[in-house]
Length: 479
Image (cartoon, rainbow, N blue to C red):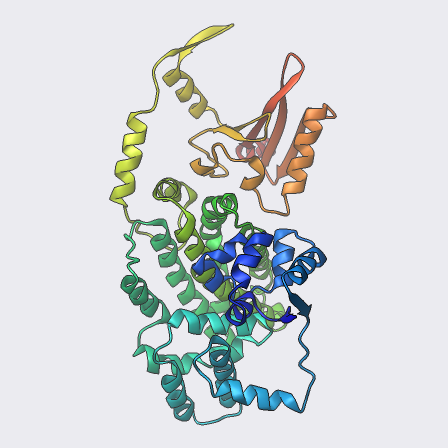
């Protein structure tokens, strides 16, 4: 029987046993057949982790692999006598991803031991001059995922410039994309999100430098500014992740959305504490921690999320993502770029929309245009969810919580973080069972009201109304 080490990544196992691609696809891991998924996700995903993401029982998967002639084991690294010899053999072979990973690990150790930078730089250039920068950054991320500190991995940044000739990793990646025929318009959603990332990266680096030097006021200012990352995360979470989930990739939504929330919460918490000198010293490590998590998130967006979306989304998908970008707001970018190709498509769609006609109701009649204008004039944000939990309508001019047009027709659960979905499901289930017919949620001065809608006793949907009572309360309190 062939042995499968479940501690190894899927990419490593496939390199060892190429036939695993078809076998894993047959079991249910169909993403493995897509080269970019194998390249990006396969470098960090093991079979047990994959089962967790997919919701598969690991024991069932192991039984199926056994039937194909594989024995699943958890490789041991406790053999002190054999390990150094095995590692040395792989280190000398820089023609495989595993060998190159061990080379990078070894170079980091050499830098940490204080070895001369130029000596390590020369070895780095010799070993990696023909290797894609994406693979290099991918290996670095894998080392971080395995537990190596970001600070140790960052020591490699000083020797990157020798290979990249003074260019940034992003500039080299852009050149590689161009060579592979990937040349995105500046107005394309991915181009705009990447542009935001470049500015976010600079702000993170400035904040890390200020924190290392103990400049509390500069750190406080940077943390407050970085709270402006919310629109960037919202665009990723509400425009890209739900669509990826529909294409069979729930992982980014399940994992990234939760991490985004943790980052935003930590930024908010720190902005309340480090403005006072007495709290700053004990928070410095937390500041560094959240900034490094933000850096890791940029990597995951650009090396996992965006490539997966580029591989799976259709042109029309991207046109509709573009349509919603402006409404979701910008993070640190003053200038937005038009994407003429998308503008032309959206204009043609708008021109063909049905806008004429009269709607007759028991208490009067309105034209479609009059009804739309009236709804837009109301001070509440309104969303309608049908009996099958799909979003059918929302007011175009959302005043409080911007909502992307791409959510129309989607399950309402897909418009919420994974942690919130059980609560949404429970609420709608109560409406259907008539155990309650409304629910109010207050967030400071904002009330979110959910109301069940029945037609002759039959549940036909739910209306969500959001209203800001801030001015009302302010006027009341002033009297």
